[in-house]
Amino acid sequence: MGSLQESLNRFKKQQEKCQSTLKSIAGSKTTTKTTAPPPPRAVPASTLAKSPLPAVKFSNDTERLQHINNIRKSPVGAQIKRVIDLLFESRQSFTAEQINEACYVDVKGNKAVFESLAKNPKVNYEGKRFSYKSKHNVRDQKELLRLVRTFAEGIAVADLKDAYPTVMEDLQEDIAYPNDPRVPIKVDDELKGLFRAIELPRDMLDIERELQKNGMKPATNTAKRRVAAQNFGILTKPKQKKKKTEISKRTKLTNAHLPELFRNLNG
Image (cartoon, rainbow, N blue to C red; front, side, top):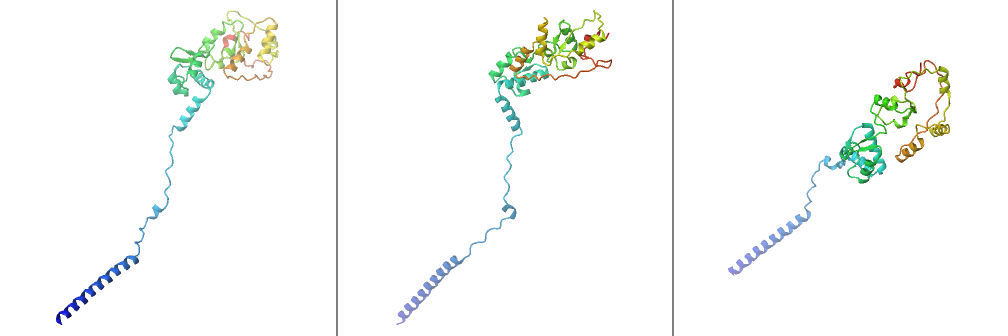
């Protein structure tokens, strides 16, 4: 009887232990289901504002490179004119590399440009360097005066306008005539007035025709010059008619920078 009672007591204890274990398991599951998720981590307000994307910075040379590209893609004639302008204004000789640096025309890398430039009548090419070639090789006023004196019938200013940069300051007429200081000539004022009062045609072509009709050879060839100008893309503006002026003591003579040509005119 005593052993039976002990067995019952052990059974009860085991049952209580099992129930306690079941309660603890059930309690842990409930706690897991009802546990609130952790609160989100606070984020600083400065990071919430969307930071602007960094501006795209192009190279400082982008505009220059685009300009160079446009020049090199332009027609051959436009590139030739750009080089000739450089040679005319500077009156210096340039290698192909120096031309490229100065005006971005790649003479060495463009066969068509190189060949056209080397054969251009306004360009001297000496195998390595390019320079400007004027029709008459005069470099200053003294050389200009010596040249004019070799043309007894006068020389067209159009043939001299590219001789040196300031030549047009020394020549202000359409034709420059020589004057031999060894031969004193006194011209009557009335004759001077009659000469200056003659109204000439506005177009040089008409003047040349009139000279030829009277058996005189014109010192200019306007038709030929205009054809050459068109071939090289140079536009000539029609000459505007000048107003008639009275001849007086205060009248300013043209070609004033070359007084030797008019030394005896006012005598």
